[in-house]
Length: 78
Ligand SMILES: [Zn+2]
Image (cartoon, rainbow, N blue to C red; front, side, top):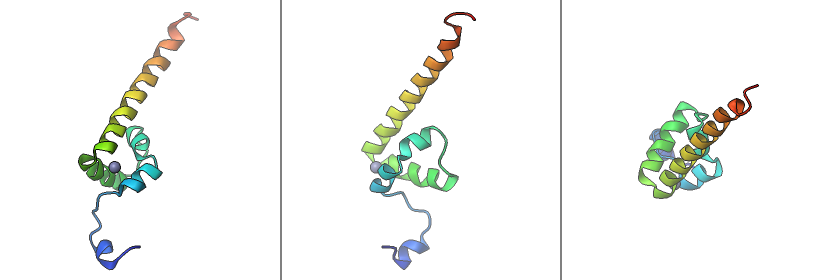
């Protein structure tokens, strides 16, 4: 699977299947990717429409969830 050449260039974009498998979009938006994976994933989704949309959708979802959580405690005042 890993050729010596691949091993030599360490800075390589993530494979799409890998990104999907590890749910990289969600992890990325939540800030849970390691710095290395983050860079690899960024390099991948700049060139991958499907993953770019995933990141957008995940970001919108997280934003929404935050709004809901933020509004909830104030509903009844106590
Ligand atoms: Zn992709």
